[in-house]
Length: 330
Image 1: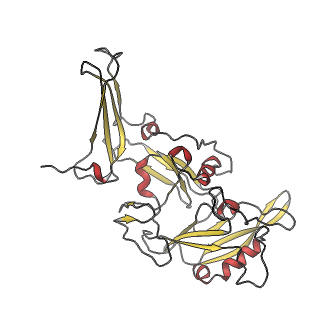
Image 2: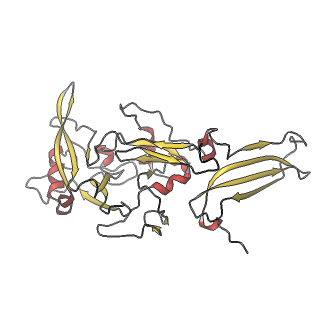
Image 3: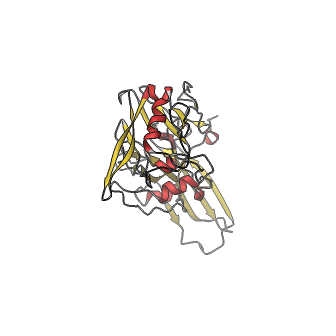
């Protein structure tokens, strides 16, 4: 029950494995139509004469827009991910001065290519925007290793809020269960993490079936405080660049996202026996298959009773198991 972004060049199709194996609801998060398998491009045009970007301020969450961050994976299974951040207003390694409030696209390309670590794995270059106003400079970033060895994307926030490499990334609201398919994160180059134990980005459990394809968003409506994520949801577009009209101020529960597609999760209203009586007690229980693990799909059964002890309402809703929910037979 949250929003996710898909920054990669292939669709995500989430499937719930439930009672009826032949008929199960699917939950898509579409491809990032603004990139290729091995290359990304900026979608925000520089403005003014000459054309420049203003990277002197902060994004909506108070983080410097001068910092540009890539996240990449070099292992064949793409289970270990590294973030690398660069100050793209730093002119230390170029032979001219850069004004942070008026950075030319070619200057960003020069700064990136002058960074030793960046240039080991990536190459920045200039492309062109073409519209009714003529051609304008556009920043391109291409990985040097083949796609069978490497995957990467531009991390949301900071400079990305200005340059907009993810402007056409897929955005969808998906059930909590699909958190298992979010990208794992190592914080520094060269760091590693056991992909089957702890996700150091969130402190949670990782899964051996994780696809490492989604970025979980944290809009205010979900109890978060990431204003950048609110903007990502509100600005989400289709493959043609048309705004999808998503509302970042509301988060639907997992059961709402089912939209009547499954008979596994049901609501029961008992009309006989005085359903008009006030509810005096609510009892919740969990049902899940033997051998299930934290992160697996379960049923939460909520029974509401009246003063006579009769069940008035019963709700069978989807639930994602926590480690603390698991029990062991005597």
